Amino acid sequence: MISIFRLKNIISIKDFEREDIEYILNEASKLENIAKSKETCEELKGKILGLMFFEPSTRTKLSFETAIKRLGGDGIGFENSGSSSVSKGESIADTAKMFEGYCDALVIRHELEGVSKFISGIVDVPVINAGDGAGQHPTQTLLDLYTIKNEIGSIDNLKIALIGDLKFGRTVHSLSNALSLFNNVKIYLVSPKELKMPQEILIDLNKTNIEYEEVDNIESIIDDVDVLYVTRIQKERFPDIDDYMKIKGAYVINKKMLEGKDLIVMHPLPRIDEIAGDVDDTKYNKYFTQAANAVPVRMAILKTLIKNNPK
Ligand code: CP
Image 1 (cartoon, protein in one colour):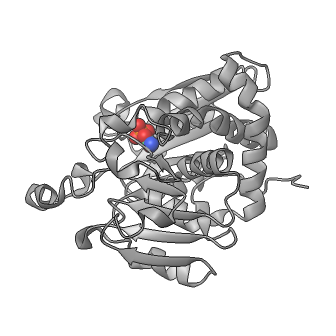
Image 2 (tube, rainbow, N blue to C red):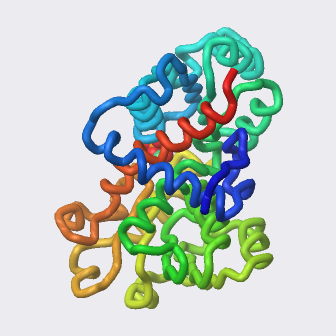
């Protein structure tokens, strides 16, 4: 029986036990009817969510806004530092203290690793990391796991290929850490040599029972996996644009290569060209479902954190 959620803040998936993940996925299942029927409830009536987005976002910001509204609350915030007084020189710390006075929880995206953790140390309301540079994206991982559980039936015994930018991709960092909490999981790490999974994540994996293998092509593993988890090569993370141009388009999934395979294709999105448009209308496409699953999962996160930590 999953009866408690221990965390006040969601900063890194490494702070989670398996039971914490299962708690959120279970809550999300219960909220899915409201999310999918486009209704609202009064679970968080009168509660305000603060959204501090210093980096661009479509899915994370809009799904958090949708989630708080479907729970009967509301959201306030900004979507770049240029539209806040940070542009006048106000510190992130002072900005966060203002949000603390106005809100019941804070969601923060920033291009620097560690910003959410820093803010969680100076405010009393729950803080949620919505992506910190090339660090972590824990709420994306929770919706990824929710999608895998719904589509495959179980996270235990999973075989998954993480493809693309494993060096800077925060979604694959968080997901790798989370998968190591489950039983009999194998991860194939598929990337160009320039974008391999960082050593610190491999060291984390080596401390667990998870099996992983680094490979440089999709063909060698495509018959062996349940999930192809594709990521974008992130132009904005390359200090030198020439380095980006050399590996841009290194991996492209198309309909022909999927025919006859027993797998699903996931992607945290946005995509550029790494999944061809002809995959969209096939049974393999679960990336739009994955994006929609953000609403019940983020509803579960907000309900849990705000109810467990009243102001
Ligand atoms: N998956 C994800 O984080 O998308 P956004 O950058 O649009 O929020």
